[in-house]
Length: 248
Image (cartoon, rainbow, N blue to C red):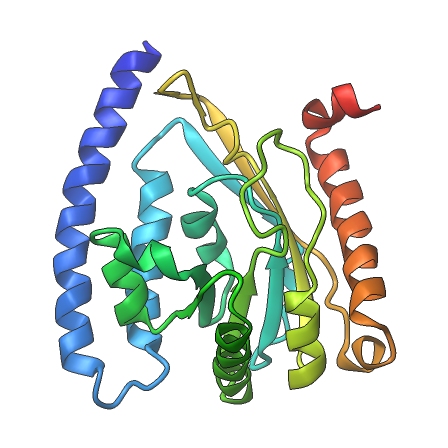
């Protein structure tokens, strides 16, 4: 049965993605000259992302903590990273944001083109100059009221657990004066098993209380990194204890 569900879902997903890419490209052409923050393109991406989960009637998305988001405020959003499905899942966040993505991701057909048109921020690993440029681009967005989403683990987990964090997001928050909004997700790591979708399946997004700029300013990036790492890992363990059975 799951094989048939997989064929059904992937077929619909491919057809819908091709169609929505045409819409996205058209919207970009029509708005690029006056929509500096690509807000309209973001709405198209959000529609695609939400529909991606709705195409599978055996999937559901649960969001907790939306009350922690303050309208009109830009955030440095930090999230754990489980799989590529994290990207569409995080579009449940109710504000315009930009991704910080590895430069090589932009070379992927369709997906990379959308990132470029969306105005997301590319970073080249291991290049200090590129890191400075990335931080400057992110700060500019934050000052204009556009949030930034980063995966402080740096790469996807191989176990389902939350791994150790890097300091980049914390440095950005300190330099920009923006709040940090921690987001813990689960469900994308094990949405597929042996090449087949898992159905029924639940995806969870828990938005934690924001860490204010005042607290960030008086805390070192390393201490802030470790505090957030522990907080988000403990939260994820409560949400998804199945990933931590071998860690106890």
